[in-house]
Length: 309
Length: 276
Image 1 (cartoon, chains in turn green, yellow):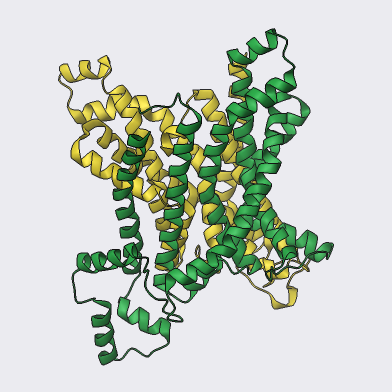
Image 2 (cartoon, rainbow over the protein chains, first blue to last red):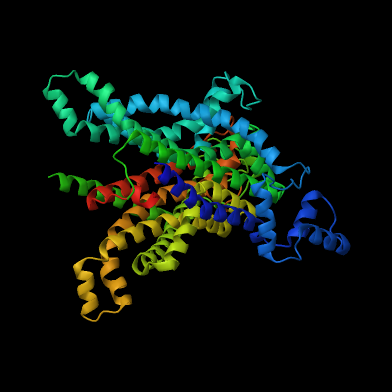
């Protein structure tokens, strides 16, 4: 196990290099001179002298690799540069916003698990019943409805039609309800599908048939054995869905004006605040990588049959 | 019995998908009005005989714009899936066939790109490039070619030691011939199925970018940007949001169903391979 963890951590090194390289390059794929862009986004008129000073300050006279190396060393120390817009450290901005995003993302994740696990099991146990068909149609629908659309439908229904909830989130618990639902339901589609498939596979396996033959009550088989054995694959999907959660939150936050990382990055895109965009991309990628690594390790802890292949 | 039943669904969804493509091709001819003609006097009008699905915030015909948007949404998704599938598959096939150091390097790069959630990377790239149809396609393409490479590579590795491949080599086929004739033939169905399942995803990605203002440039009609434009009038003209939304959801569902039906019919399992 320790050997495996070591191996996985070693494999993270090239991934980390590429993540940071891609994020660093982002500023340079944008059309135009980086120094000029920085000045413009700060609202300074780029005269020839100021431009030259800024270029030197940004190290643009040095080769790309040197700049990347310097930036990477900073990144390792947690320094992601300063925002063009307000000169505050990017890591601090992201850290503050991440708390807000985590609130929505975590509540959406919990809500979708509460909805999906029972429904997925139900759908599998009643395979080919009317309920199963309805649920399968729902999972297909959920996979085709983007969260921004769901958000608008929720706003129309709850804020305009019923007038029971505020449109703008405004940091309140009430304001958290709609963003959470808008983020959770599209993910439920994937979760229910996965839980159903996994439970169906378990139900068809020998140990279930054996337990049934011994006269064990079907509910006990379901809860004690099947659900337990399905947990692994559910953990895996949760790991994969973290990416969808963050991507969804960018859109959701800009609709509900929720002050998380999604809103931060959309504001940064509008004002061409590149360090913030870079920092955001790295932040999400690192979280994503760590969570996927944790999922992988969880797999090994919970299922001793999984070995190196 | 079971197989024929599965085939029926496949043909039904294939027919529906082709019908959608056909509609988008003749969108200009069947649209009742000019999709870009604005009219300040008829802003947010309810559906009527002249405007069957109402008008939007600039008095444009919603039906005509939904039809025009079909062309943008469907074709951009199909073209992008085609390009990324071909590019990714070729890279993956070469890596799997020749292995070696180059394979190691390319695979590490792919690991790195896949370390980003696809949509996050696309939003960042499109955001930095500054929107527009082509930039949105570049952004989505950059983030979405990698699964094809992984899938093609793992399939090539699993069949390249088979006897018919060595037989082809012994009978004097060049690597190029082996790759194009025998290997492509054997891995095509997996790649085609995976590509089909991706059409809906790409379409939603495109709509998402457009919704954020990082997709098509206005006034070009696209479902995501139509929804975004109309959301300010949600209370007074809900049809301007509803109909492009229905078109988007319906189209994505058709292509998703088609992908699933194809997977069942060809009996290929690919999710785990493409992701790992």
